[in-house]
Amino acid sequence: MTSPPSEVSPHLTVKQLAARWHTTPAAIYIARHRGKAPQGFRRGSRVLFPLAEVERFEKQEMAVDRPSHRRTAYEHRPPEPLRGRPRRPAATRA
Image 1 (tube, one colour):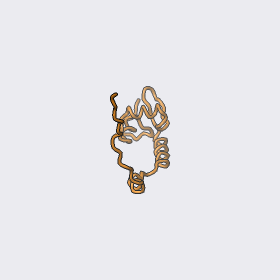
Image 2 (image 1 turned 180 degrees about the vertical axis):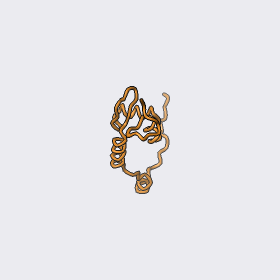
Image 3 (image 1 turned 60 degrees about the horizontal axis):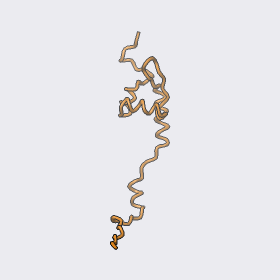
Image 4 (image 1 turned 120 degrees about the vertical axis):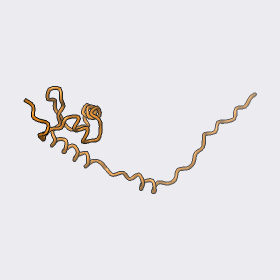
């Protein structure tokens, strides 16, 4: 007998994880195949991810993610010279 859907499960399905990460289930399957998703396991034909493992994975990803400094990096970068189209040597006819 299956449990009613209203019960809180300690596991997330692929669809639930995709909704949590604002992506598609196909992207979750691809990330799992590439090893860039939390550890999950198969239960029949479904893939389940333990909620504790998902939270650990998210915490680990946040720890290695650095903030973007594009705006400040642009201010410190020297201006690049303007380059036009490279000129071809004039063809001479003999």
